[in-house]
Length: 308
Ligand code: AMP
Image (tube, rainbow, N blue to C red):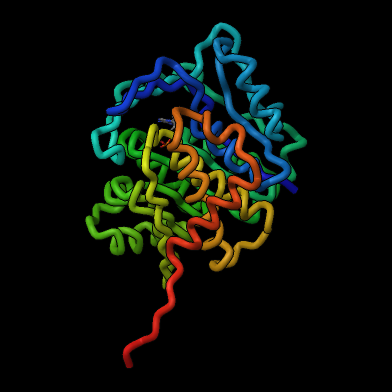
């Protein structure tokens, strides 16, 4: 049984108040798969790139136990390209350019060997493509997690709403939760979004942590206060990778285990922002991951007695 990850494998160009990159390797599925690889032993990737995508980046993923046999390489076509600029708060950003390139007309073919998918992570991609992946799996996975973004809400809201009826967990950021629900209060937004289909909702709030909701419970995980945030790109995807990777490995979808998964996800996101692109999450040691999770435990642990 395994974890199937879909999403973009991309080139990104990033501007932050601290620096600027030319095209570097990024993409939602790249961050997710790398991050999940610290927890899950078997990760299958379905995505698409053009012939301009470096073989070394594919090999880097393979070294981390990611099966890339479902990564289509389209000859004569260009890889998906995204460029963004972060504001001074490093929490908000503007998309400067999105070139779908090879993503237009992407047909997500699922290799027969990937049909044993028990956990499905639908990383950021056109909702219609995400839906096709669900439809093509012969057996419904135990847990389907969906990530999306404002870009798709702007141009494919109807497809996204149809998709929400078919997933178990939705992960979005606070602005996107407001856009999707039309509510400013995140608590009201969460209730409206849960009415749209998913049993669980995770609202990511960047440096302010993340909230996990179901109908009658809410859990909060902080973000680690870091001295330096270098590049927030992929933080959400690294979060999703740690979250689903941990669940896939423990195979436990109780609310208590989802809470633990949120902490592992937050730990992976905290690494991701420390360097540009995927650099930080390519070569972590198990010890580094464990230490980071311990920092989260220490951060929120306190003894208290109620006054009455
Ligand atoms: P995050 O910072 O977690 O929201 O993810 C950023 C990653 O998402 C980048 O590496 C981009 O390549 C990728 N990305 C940006 N826009 C889109 C989009 N419209 N669809 C899919 N992936 C995208």
